[in-house]
Length: 398
Ligand code: AMP
Ligand code: MG
Image (tube, rainbow, N blue to C red):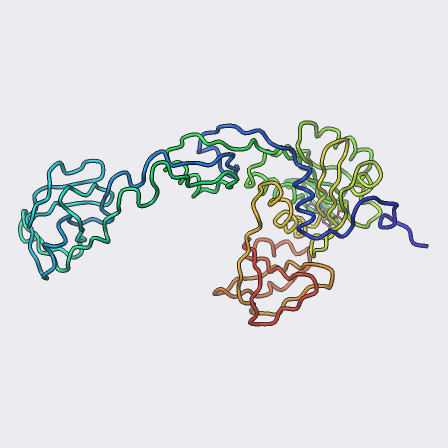
């Protein structure tokens, strides 16, 4: 007769796929209100409405280079000579018009004067005297940036649901938005578990390990635009664990690490299986298989495995996409070494990226912490597949 947690009477699925796990977590998260925040403070947040450009960019037709602005037709025979009649610089346009045989000195971002349609860069100019220049190649209309060539006033440029990376914040600002409509931050309570887990800065006894998960996961949550409510660390003691969970009031979801696999002292698992409500236990992935999703007194709880490698991979492929609504970004790259997976588990191999080719990092044990920062990529091998050298594989950049 078998016993143990795998054989409990249960009304929840076990061994769900990675995408099922992601969808089930997303479904437990609350609908969020929207708010306006200044753009500088919106890093990692998600846009709650489409953003239209309030202005055109460029706001006027301008030069892409430092040089002279003139009429292209005047410069077709090489070399040609033009009379300098003025200057247009960024923020201070030339007020007049450029006539035949004339040019104005112009600088990057400066408005193109009336009459001119082309630019000759400074590298292709010779100064004859202070009022005349010789052009060593024809002026080009291609070095003119046209008004609205990037975006036009009124055009919807960013869509609701966009996750705000640094370049996207810059774009939103260029569109003219000083404040951005975003979803309120998810409030994520974060807890480490384990009698052996010790806060860094303390002396470490043999058999103990520093609490790297609370630091790594907190940083990843902040990157994902969440507000982190640190609950610290719980010992492997069910009553204390329950007490600490009770202190997570106000959180939208609790993320824990450790205590969810098959061991006798894995009390986060027991708490959810026996006293809580479980959505699933175990995901068909490696590393990261023991993850559990459930609820404790109405609070959604996602239990990550304690191994930092496992928790990082689960965070990448399940938690972050569920929290941000952004799909996992993968790209196809060539395999430089073989990769494989078990018949019933998607494998995530830590890999090095060398010249667009991915190579097995080497040690794939989920206790090899240095692999997290040294490997640049995860190679995704779907259940029951073998990848040969030269095959294309899906890769997640870390
Ligand atoms: P567990 O999932 O609780 O069985 O833990 C699996 C492994 O991860 C053990 O070797 C733990 O010592 C280690 N571990 C658990 N929690 C942490 C943590 N917060 N930081 C670093 N390592 C951890
Ligand atoms: Mg543990």
